[in-house]
Image 1 (cartoon, rainbow, N blue to C red):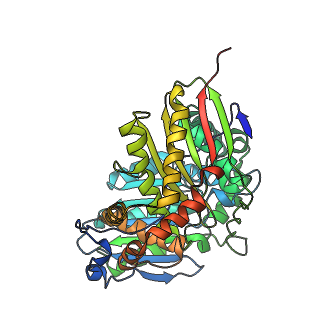
Image 2 (cartoon, rainbow, N blue to C red):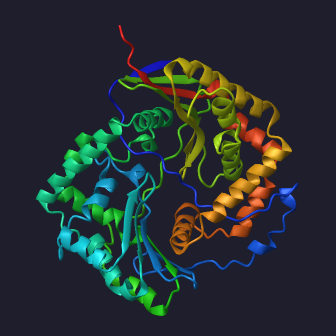
Image 3 (tube, rainbow, N blue to C red):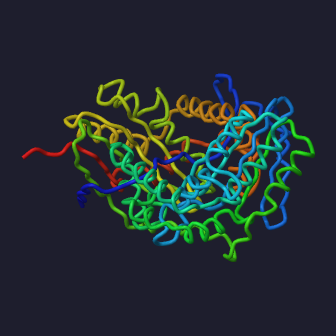
Length: 457
């Protein structure tokens, strides 16, 4: 079936989800024979459950000269109710717009005066606020962050102003061809599942937010039971106590528990389909894919490796076939996005409109080759080294250690040591890759989504 989408689809690009491992691996004939003893004996973060239900994770990094703190919520855009689409992201904006004790400028100036690096983001699964600061400023910085997050002013004039800002952000997505396509693709593939909703919401939903709505939603999103504090660095007992004291006033929330992520859509009878957007673009943007799997699925590592084999690096099959051998595209890659109950797999990129049919043929051919024969031993060994290296390189630094601890807690409910991840990567075999290819990369079941130039009459 063909769906022609006019001027629809808003919102945020997929983020990559999975918190995994890292390690520097030498090139060896048999990666599975690598001695993983080097990765064993890793100590998990200290995990405490605070009054109210918040979780505090402490990751000692004795060589660090800075401290890294993350405040993570267990709620993102996927659990927003009808009419509140985009409220998690809007709350992320509004807490920077003034607290009951400080103006927006005073908050910004205070963080700058401490040299603190502050960041915030919203995904389908969480809202996060991260801070990196020197130890001598930690106490003041934590108190400021807590004031900002726990006691936002939500002044009506500031709400109206930020509604305009977020609506501009939504328009910016509509003017970004790959983002616009991705949002339409996700909505089509998820087929009514809330994970297909844009993180930013819509202009209509954003303009509907008022002070009462924001206070109600803030009390739930930032309820103590929904919070994970992740603290990393050369930690002293006082650092822990400063965090506990600063956030002691977290709201209790009214809901009995954090809403569970909705179940995955039923795709047992799904056939291939096509989604088409037309606008005044020059190139054709494409996504070929389908529903993926949840982040805790037993085949998670095998699917990540399969995606990397197909289009994860310069030696991957699709990159070599589409770009290097035939010159069909400058940008082409595969990705996976995994959530609590479901996810996406896709091959994405852009090409000249006249090359689109050939790109589709080449991607189909490479998928069918993988379904039939799987990877060679050399490909499998190379990709094991790549995956393990990516995982470990990403953990270097105090900020990344903070991220890792938080995401392990949020996605898996436990700390996953490097040794376990290395073992799981090394255990992937050809049969597992073929099984995943047949389940998630069968060309006869793919959604083909394209954003093409408008056809001239």
